Image 1 (cartoon, one colour):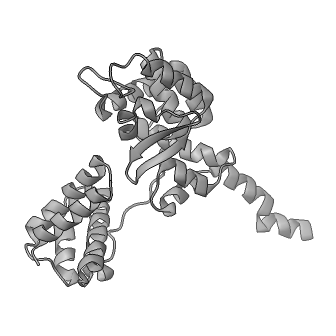
Image 2 (cartoon, helix red, strand yellow; image 1 turned 180 degrees about the vertical axis):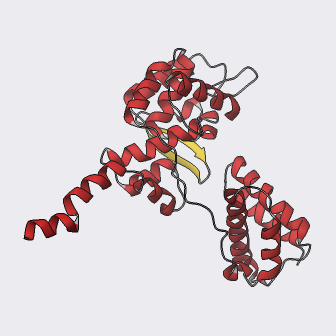
Image 3 (cartoon, one colour; image 1 turned 120 degrees about the vertical axis):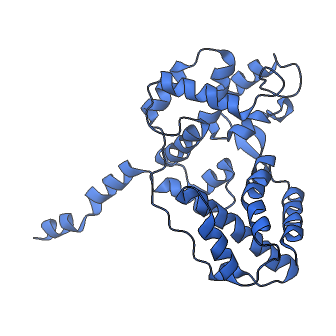
Length: 276
C-alpha cells in the first residue's frame, strides 16, 4: 500500500473525528515527510527507524514524530489489519525537563497587570479554566452558558466550568463583538499569535521570568494549582480536554510543596528516630 494513500485515509479519519484544525496540521507536519521518505507503507521497523534517525531538531521534535507515527500505524492496523512496525520501534530518548508553570503569587500579579477589558477577559478566562489559545480564538457568544463555556479543542467539543467573575467579563466583552465570536483582532476573529503576544506582554509586566511566556504557561499553572488546591485528576482531565489521563498525571508531579510535606511526614528516617 502506498504511504500517501494510507496517510490520506488517516487524516480523513481525524477530520471525521472532529479533531481541531491545529491537531490535523500537527499530524500533517510530522507525517508528510515520512510519506515522502517511504513511498510504500513499511511492514517492518527498519525503514521507520531509519527515518527517525534522520529527523532533525530537538529531542522533543523527534519524540513528537515518533508519537505521530505510533498513532498513524495503530490506525492502519485497526483499519486495514496491517502489521504495526512501531511495536518494535523504541521511542527516542529525551531529557526529563520540568514543565514551566506559575505560582499563585505570580497569577495574582498577572491578573493585576492587565489593563484593557479584552486582555482582562482573556487572561481571566485562561487562569480560571486552563483552556488552550485555539479554544479562546474559537469561543462563540452562544457557547457562554450559565456556569460553563463550550469550547472546541483537540478532543472535540467539551463543556468547561467557569467562575461567575469570568462569565461576567466574557458577557461584557461579547456584547461589543460585531458577530458571534467573543474575541476579535484587527481583521476578524482573534488569532493564536495575538493571544500569545497579549499573554507574553502581561507576564513580562507581572515580572514572570523563565521560558515559554505564552498562554500554555498559564494553562500549565492552572493544571498544577487545580491539584494543589485539592482538585482531582479525573476532573482535571475533563476540564483540560486531555484524551489520555497520563497527560494529566504530569501535573501531579509538579506539586512539589505537597511532596515535601509528605516526605517530612513519611520519611523512613523520621520513623527510625521515633522508634529509637
